[in-house]
Image (cartoon, rainbow, N blue to C red; front, top):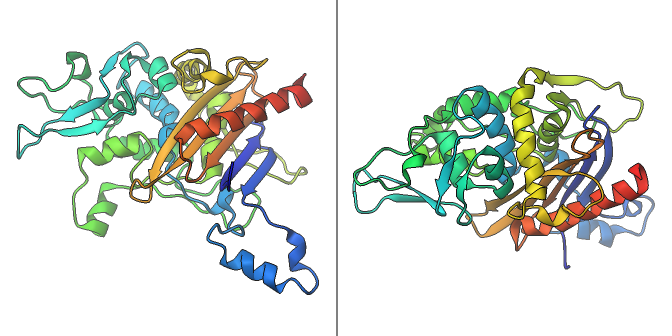
Length: 350
């Protein structure tokens, strides 16, 4: 397996209680007590893997496709799409180039997806579907660059996306009872103009719609989001101290109709042969899931992500798996998640 760097979190989505928390690589706390451990301490302090860095609360990551359930809820609520609206992905989306008509910009899907609606787009993790849901259909050209069914969708746009990120509690700390929590980062057109001196482009919206670009979340923010999808709209303040009183940070239960449609896609992620977590379908209880891969370090590395919950109809556990510099993207995270879910069923539910 080699060296692993990442985060694992298990949470009760019904109250925010953290059931398990793992930061990798780990280290032996005992080296900081007593004397005679200076070499071990120096090794920890100088390690490029940063074992003393608490990735769960202080790490900020592109969420990749794990942001798509939030996109789905937002798009349904705002009337951008309905759950049956279909989009066709041949593996890319072409956007007209105003400076050179023969060289359109190509936004890649991770594979050929065919015709997808909301549920199958979540299950198969179609990028083209969520490009269009987030940023809108590309401009019409003659001849058309894409399938006719891909046009006529206005998209959420960056301003509405930003508002929905905040609606789900992103861009601020969760309040977890641990020190050093970061708030993540939500990009805006004004920020880009001030920082880079360039305007926000359609491609920027496409990128953040699939969890890439400058959007950054902490693992705790991300598991809070999937917890809200699991329980029907309540974002709980996560806590480790068992004596803590559960508290709701954001109440989104008015979105239950939209959340239920998204839940169908997360279930299909596991039950559909085309689903990105289909290998979990033989677990002894129902699991709902979303996988993700995020390109980092100028696309030289890829982080693997998994978020999910079970049982789907009465969730007792929500989990997040994040593996840094994963060679095969989300394919590396799914087996880990399956082992966790199977252990939980055998040792806690069964």
